[in-house]
Amino acid sequence: MDDGSDNGEGAASAARPRRKDARRNQQTLLDAAAAVFVTSGVDAPVRDIAAEAGVGTGTIYRHFPTRADLVIAVYRHQVDACAEAGPTLLAAGPTPHAALGQWVDLFVDFLVTKHGLAAAMRGDSSGFEALHTYFLDRLVPVCTELLGAAAASGEIRSDLDAYQLMRGIGNLCVGADSDPRYDARRVVATLVAGLR
Image (cartoon, rainbow, N blue to C red):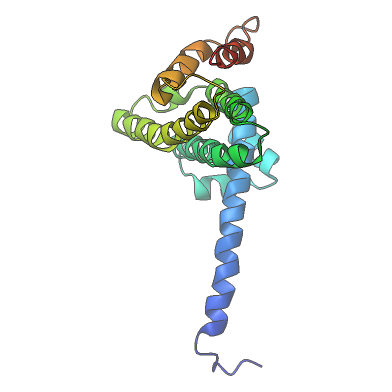
């Protein structure tokens, strides 16, 4: 029987797992939404996202009251995953150039699969600008690190700029989601091979 004499320690230790579970649950929701967005775009029914996540639609709305909230959260989640992958790939890859190529593949997947973000953010130009700034702040340093490592190993030229490369990759990805004959990943792979 609890006599209330735990001085709050029990409550504090019980709260930590709930916070960790809440973060894990939110990650599950974001992963599910991202997967549905890839196949159906950002206008996919919330019930499809809920089914993918194995939760009720109320759970989605409790975490993300509007579609824009959900799209922004998925976008930030994917930016974070792409940013975190860079150092991991560099540490585990056989060469810095191989790590750069793997990271660029993830970056292309991110670009090609973010269907409809601009439409979902249409009425919120300041929100879109903040998201774009977040994207640049998180990903340009990672790309810079990968380019620097590949240049230091002598695998690529040393005069490459991360922002310019990312912008070029982005331009090569335009329209990839609307033209099944166009394979942006293959074109970008040719670009990365040409960095040598």
